[in-house]
Image (cartoon, rainbow, N blue to C red):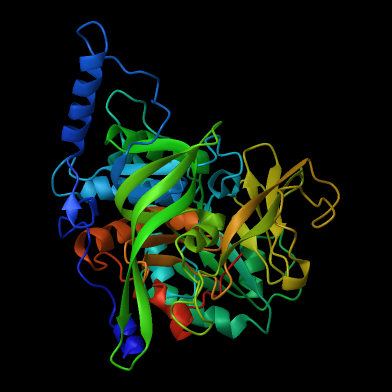
Length: 470
């Protein structure tokens, strides 16, 4: 019965039902409460005008309808679509909590900024098609009055995937799905490949797939700053701090087949602000877990996975940090301006960077080669010796099926996910943000059906396996 209910999908949206911030059944009148506090302070202080006793501008608000944990592009995209789709301007109060306000370790800004439709799952192809339309018309979505237009520096040079004899059939099947979903992708024989890209060594290459439209790379920092600027103009609040605790209520239930489950609802988020040992409690109606590589830890704070193994209560969010290296090198005799982003069967990839004969790339490690994610130090010997510069960033790696987790948790009923995309979250962020906002507001996906990406699949053992991971 429980498994059948989980497969049925989503219920009415929490925000769509007009749910405010509740605790023990009553809505708190925050503005009235603050007014009363001001009057009391005014009555005991000399002088007529009330003035704050201390500067609290760095603290988060005491109350927010939605608290988004993670201020990268996924979290900001959720915030943007919540404000854009709200029925009445200012109806939803949104707070974004980001612990790294410099974004120095953010997956967003440490990525190579690629976007493609060459995936194996229809849902991922649809997400990228939606997102590329968003990116190519960025100023129609993210323009702010009196601010300069955004320039994402989108380079539509395409992706070129190479396949060996062993992977040729899989590539053919993938391209068939991609074309069915509307992506412009062509297959190329080794001879065709050599003719179009004479600099490629086709030894060992049996087949190639090449994106003809809407694939390439862009500036991730520009997208991040554009989203942040826009949502601030829409009234979204920001806090530089770390979520350390959730306060929740529980409701014990028993299913028709006798399985006991505990439903939880988060009422309060504790945020430890920068340069302080104290926390600020924030009462809320909904929490969005968009904490990227650290979203598994945020889920644990909410009690997710703390139950008997094999039960829904004991099912963890299988997202962990995986470190990936990016290298930059100079090659005067390289492929030149027409080079696409190239990925070969070994997991190695590269693309052009700028106009000065520079290239950046890397290589996906095997399970045995996975580097220690405890820091962002670079192993310069992992790729090749002659590199000019290198850095490392994190994937929010879904160990179950390398695919995103979107939508509500079945037991912590007001925690929603936007995480686990294993390296393709940046390029799909505009579409994912809309999908999460739709579920929160309406109770179901509207633009793209992402039901295969719900948390339930981890308990049911139903993988949404994505085979095209770089």
